Length: 610
Figure 1 (cartoon, rainbow, N blue to C red):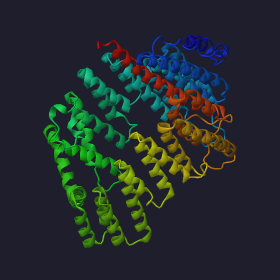
Figure 2 (cartoon, rainbow, N blue to C red):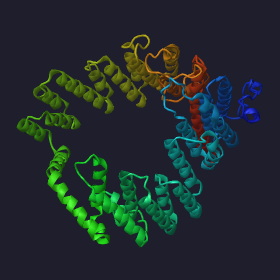
Figure 3 (cartoon, one colour):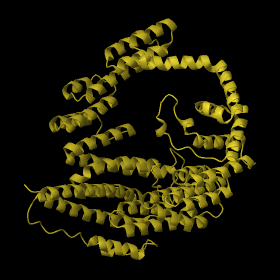
Figure 4 (tube, rainbow, N blue to C red):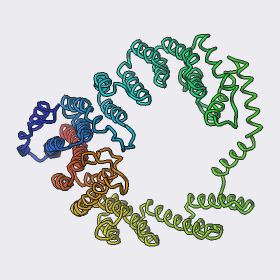
């Protein structure tokens, strides 16, 4: 009932974000008490309560959206709200998706760089990101929105943006027309007429799975254009030609030592005789120019090693090319054969060597790398005392020796904690000298105890960890420790967990307020506030900190949704409060789905004959 009102109101005034929210002021109607308290009826009641709480929260999120001054933030909120609504009300979700994309003009306007602003223009990236998220729910809708808005928002994009937009459009169309090879072929031909791109190359693969004849025709056109295109560098021509060759001979990109069954390899791309000759000619030009000492090194290695994988096939189809490649292989062996052999021996030693063999090498060569390998090997076998003894005797630098010993001790304690022997690990934790690491281990051990349903020990351990910290965090490392403490409390004592979360929200408000104040003066990491709002992009420092905090709140939410909602509402800044509500909404949607699955199981259990 409530959700229907919510949907009608949203659809009625969505496009201007000026919908009336007075219809939302009513309290959610409580479902009538079930006639019997069977497991199925209890889970059904819980599901209805969660749905009502989720509906109310989504109403508040969209109300908050009206207060956001940044078009980009409003757009991000609409996208995330639509994602949350997708399984509940698809029509409303699609309307929100459409409104988000159609409002993108505001994002472009507010992101127009000022003269003194050296920030790169990333509007095309954001546009693609938004449509990509929509495509994960409805690829046809995403493609339709792209077609109707791309020219409007990007009438004359930069070359890099043009390539990105073309490739993204190509990938969307590929999904939309997945079952129509002729449509794919026509679209690929039109794209090729505009220029060679990796997207066209990808379409060859798609067609080869559905219609090899069309794939061969497209590949032939691609090779012909590649051969005659004066705008492509030698490096780019070689890269693309090599990729096409890999489609003709799939074994080229397989590990020759993997011994894969022939049936496991993808189907090779068929080429007509002329296209194959042209392709091999391009490859032959590239092989002739291989210089193992040139700046073209990265591509040289890729070209050489991949061609070696199919040398017998190349010799069969082009003896000249095979002969050239064998000559290059002889040059490679002369220059690097010894190095390859030494590297192979080192890899073998690392995988098969023992602690003692590493020590013997260290004594013989004086190379401390073998000492490090001996320590690592001893630790991997659980011989921490031996590892520590080697570090004391063989590591000559005092600072490095201390780092090794500290790391060995920490790893020893971590291993003890992971084994689940809580009593033994509890003693070992206090041998760690670093307070931060000691607290980390106590929290981890508390989590282990909680997983074993030893709630008393878990509570003692997490309290011990908390007592070693100040009353509230004094730096980012301590802030993260308080968050981990909250997550443990979520499993054993939600009331204590909420108290810690409520303590931290005040600090979040102080810190984000300070970040906003300092932003304009260039201190610290610039947040690039627009209209005095943090961008809800998670790359923002303030949003990242808030995301870590609200994640802990969501672990507490199933125990007390109203209290979780109340603590999120204490976030001071409207854009960050909206972000917190979105994360809580995501949690409630997931919890509702979990309870619905539980109810279905209970109903099946109740219906089955006893």
